[in-house]
Image (cartoon, rainbow, N blue to C red):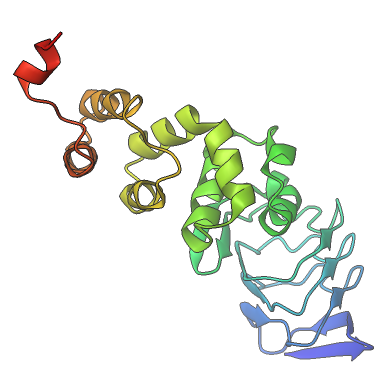
Length: 222
């Protein structure tokens, strides 16, 4: 593969030997307009942490592009950066998949790096909460992510139960920021209703560890 790069701006990509996986060189800060215009065969794109901006039409009509892998760095993705690249199905964030539809890819990239989840309220729930899961697993102490999850706690938690996201649920329990004596029984009952017995066991064990079970004589004591 060959690239035309000047002053940390990638102006042009030229395919060699029908490459399907393109790794943008580290040090590139801006992916310029139409730099990958109509790149045939491109299926997987890896973007390094040095990239800050993806300009309009940078990946226009990359109609074989299915997967984008990214870690850090992006500050802005222009609205039409992936125009007519309609087969994008997966956004891999720090090795964790965020299922994605090409229509939402630009907004998703903005949200991942600005941690402004409220701006993504128009995203379908299945996409928004998968993004929340990926972000929280990578940064369980990030205050912005925790605050968003607390505000939308019930929906986030129920979504994680319905989709059997045990790893994320375990991290939420470990954080101590979400589950308390008032809401844990609701969570347990919902896990039973959805036949998520591994999650039910996880929650009941947590409740026992916290000492939230009472003996019958204590419950009846006046």
